[in-house]
Image 1 (cartoon, one colour):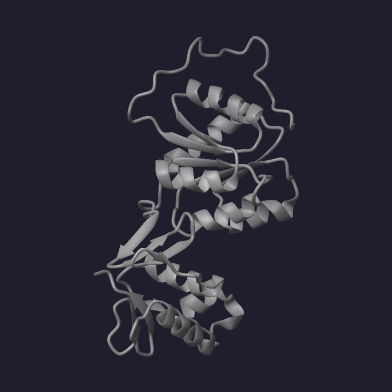
Image 2 (cartoon, rainbow, N blue to C red; image 1 turned 180 degrees about the vertical axis):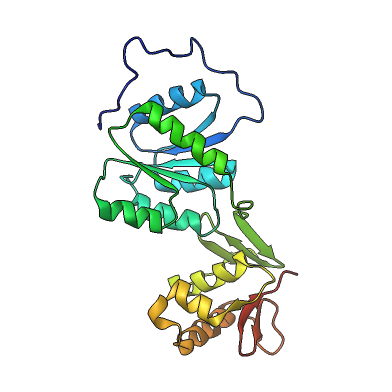
Amino acid sequence: MPVVERPKLGATAPSQPSPMSTNAACILVIDDEPQIRKFLRISLNAGGYRVVEAGSGEEGLAQAALNRPDLVVLDLGLPDKDGQQVLRELREWSQVPVLVLSVRAAESEKVLALDGGANDYVTKPFGIQEFLARIRALLRQGHQGESQAASVTVGPLHLDFAYRRVALDGAEVALTRKEYAVLATLARHLGRVVTQQQLLKDIWGPSHVEDTHYLRVVVGHLRQKLADDPANPRFIVTEAGVGYRLRDA
């Protein structure tokens, strides 16, 4: 287990946890080590925060959707999926501040996490006072707007971002990764046009912004699977020469 720096002897510590009100910030800790979770829970509770815990990536994503935390503390070495993947999936539907707490100290890991949407990165072992200061700083920054909903429903079509599931009339629809990515991007911008270039850049990468035929093929497959008539669309509307939008009603 990574060593965590405990407060020094003689340091002033609260004699009891700060009272938590119903307005206390909620912090989700995603870490597979029970000892680390316990230490963070005690420290965060003492600071007046409400703590929710998860021991795996899937559980963490579910708790994020259920509890809508104000901040997420994310370990990268999780038992079911890498924390970098958890971060990418979380960023598909939420802009909650994320502090990565990991034993991985390589610059490449830090860059990957920060480019992937993490707001801060702390390596283990860590000092608890600095960690709490970083938590306070992130919470002060607040959200750049409200976190998006964990799911979207358009008539009989339902998208669950946390579990990456799509259902039509209650039946799950099997989509490829690219098909899901296109539909999820349109759903996150519900009712608004998303340009072809934005979709190609975000899903295929910056080198494919001119490959519009990729997008046309995927949208065509999506329409087939959703029984969506392009001449009279229920869901995906083509804005000629611009891009696509998902109907919001």
